[in-house]
Image 1 (tube, rainbow, N blue to C red):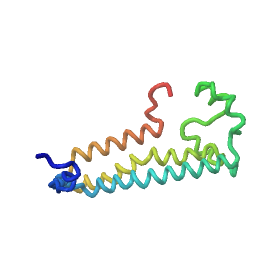
Image 2: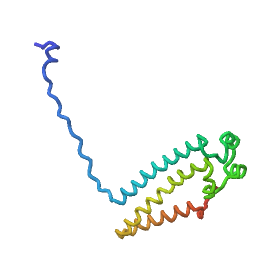
Image 3: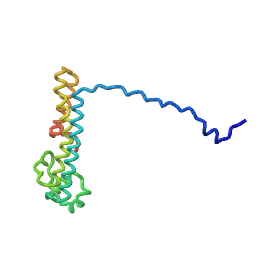
Image 4: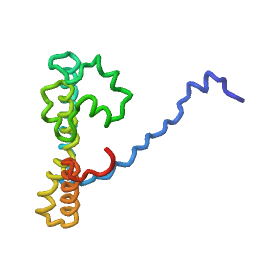
Length: 160
């Protein structure tokens, strides 16, 4: 004879034992890689904080901008080369001479963010040299040379 439904609910049902996920394999990370990661982590946050600060300076008008915000719409439709000529904007590293203007202060944070890779590679270099790791030393040196040359403007390629 069948048991009433209410009685079936009262009986204990065996519970399933939860299965634990296998532990993730332990990965060893070289100290120089941790240092590189820390340079990127803290440098990125410093760059973002600097961008935030310089934007606040720009938006509040604490420092006078080179181009007044009200004048910006007249430049929006221009090509970059036309804008540089019409607005008498500096090119290359000449923006450093314009740091007295609020709209050029933002470049400091951008330059910091852009330089983090080079700084990180320079952190890796002594470790690879001490390990006599020739391939990685060569890669790091090549990367630093190429990035520094590109940033300097010596390797100007293309129409930018």
